[in-house]
Length: 340
Image (cartoon, rainbow, N blue to C red; front, side, top):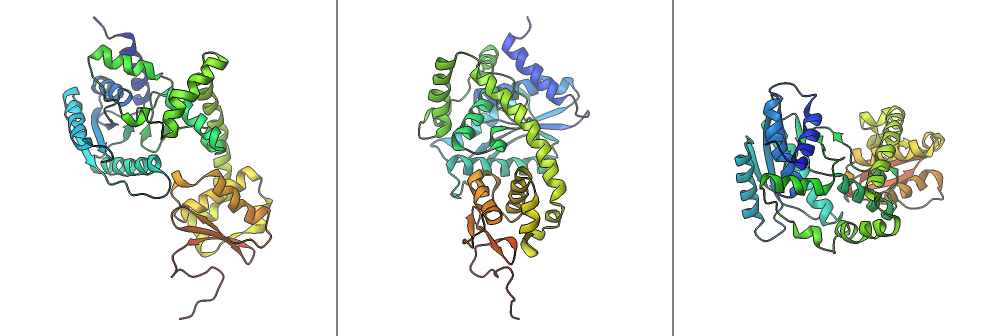
């Protein structure tokens, strides 16, 4: 007897995502123990050997909930039982950065995954985000006024990270676990209305479905795909324009306000964002509002003060240039001569 329809759907998605890898490559699955990532782990354990690949697993203990260490250990054991090897259980500290608990946990998790990739020599990491997660991401970005980059949602691939289930509904991953006899962990944060994503998942999206009819999640995910193609084109154009940033000149030479002002707005804001990231802003904490205030140093200059950014970075205009510097008190002010 073959697999159930949900198992087959998840396996098909994972197989298609891994088809470009070479025999012997190691793929890691990031697994929290929830239904989405557990379904991906089970699918990778089945599919990878049949493609000549090796499949391992990683679970990250954020230490944010009682019993998280015990649960992470249980997830690691389960990943081994599925046939994944190697399996890593990584405990991380989640320092507050001002970006919010969800962003702080996500940044800590990706740092741990980056370490696991490097140490294991893996070529890819599979993540369990589904079509529903994509729809929630787009709706959150829309509500926050985060701009096209956020509305473009999560990419199917970025660096070693891959999301094979972005066309698969969350209901399918739960069904796949049931068909395999796996009992996923249910994260209480997913039902905690203190978190915006939980409110979107359990209140906003159902309300939209009730008002507009079925298919809202699919439409939001489809919109993300369309916007992502547009965003990728604009990113490429901005990258070509900002060649000077690749030499990290933003801190030492500044960006000429005249040159910035001549760029189309969609390109200029991307150049400014890249400069802020190069100066040390955490990507997850830098919002469209921050970029708008930096952009005003170019397009609405009236002698206003600097703009403080996440990560201890400050943007200011001086001597006809926009500078990105540290807010540390011992850092020199750009454009001023220093003694010594």
